Length: 367
Image (cartoon, rainbow, N blue to C red):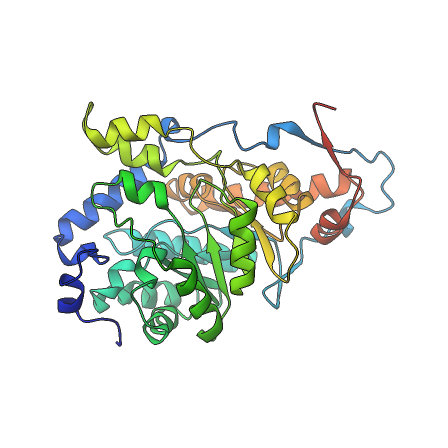
């Protein structure tokens, strides 16, 4: 692989490959902490997405039958069975291959797409790529998106990033932005200088689309504009209102520690999912808006789509269902689809595209 050598990374004060210094047990322990703590409701900014302020207009006389409702969506040049995405969660540790295989199989059955957890570990340990061979064996046809953090891709060549994508036969690359998490996390790498230029470089040179997503703190209008000008294909807003990674990292540390105090100070930091979607809608350009960050049901999906989202992503509720087993996961995904179809029918829309293009369906509860 053409990534920077381990010795080159070790010489960098930024230490963007922190795994070079961590033992396998330390790395896996951190990832297991993330899974456990992301399921704790205290680390979720519950009720702050902004969806509670939106009401979709009821259509008492839709000119269609419920059986005519279709969730088919066009995204990144593909005709997709649904607009649903299992958002990026976890990878590179014991148990993640089984979890990702379970999710990938469910996505393949139902026509969902899937983002994988950070592939950061693969940069220093090519053996970690074996996880995707196992996933692909179980779900060879599912559309999967690769995933790296901004503080890693700044120091990588486009060729090395392309190899990470090809390791899982990725449809696209997701670059995640997590400034608050990197500062609060004791092992964090908050090195973002040159990030926009790195994103633009990859958008121009990779053979697949580049998607940029936040991790629970949303996007301002100006940042979205910069990303669109850089040539990204999609922006996943991942706004404030769902799992808050500043809180998660604070919760990994002892009571009264520096990191925990910092996390408490910034426990309500971020731009809500709804405001982030509105910010994205105000920016002209040829790019897709993806809605995630605190979506918990199919009605939330409908509201995000009505605000301009082409794709809607779920993480915590999907993870919770998956940990309960294949049947629970399938039942949850089925319910989301039914809820979205019901919202479409009750607004007189036959497809998500119709809902997104409607100019009269969104009402604000304060009006």
